[in-house]
Length: 212
Image 1: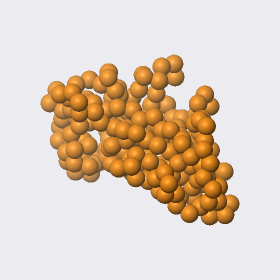
Image 2: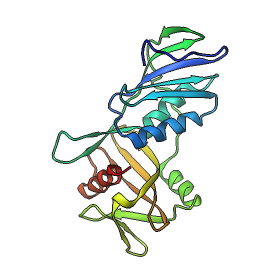
Image 3: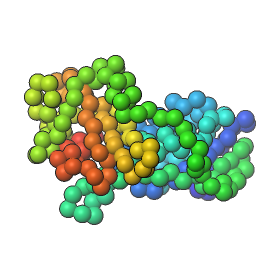
Image 4: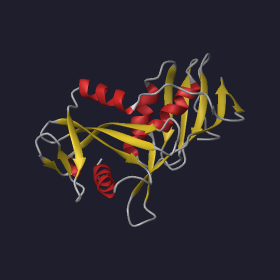
């Protein structure tokens, strides 16, 4: 999107964020929706092929924009025999006020933004109706822990994805899915995220994303 900024209305600022490796359409669309919902955000223009997101805003919290993208975006790595989920690190590269783009010297490191914990997100989703808990079988199916019903991940819709980083170790990551099954039941599936993802969980997540 560099060199092709959308017009910025008076009183509105724009920031362009590079998101290299964000190649999952489901997560990409979810992240854009989450950013649009942030206070002060006016509009969002994005290109998954260009790995770029432009956020037009009025005094929005830019660290929160970056953290939201970091939380909800991910990519996939097919370089090995197994599909691995990989994190995406947003990079703020330009900002614009009116029609004049200016360089941003750096993003917004070391400025903590309070985000949901896994427990908080689980409780929130449960209150929204996602009451079942799923686990992955060795074959990569999703099994309801309460009733034992087994579901083919390809038949399940992903309503929301929430990612988490460890407080002391950013590489200690987890991911939580809010899922809608073909029979109408709603549930949650969580897993470690990244190199530590169990094989069964990785198989289930690959199959979940395959038909989204």
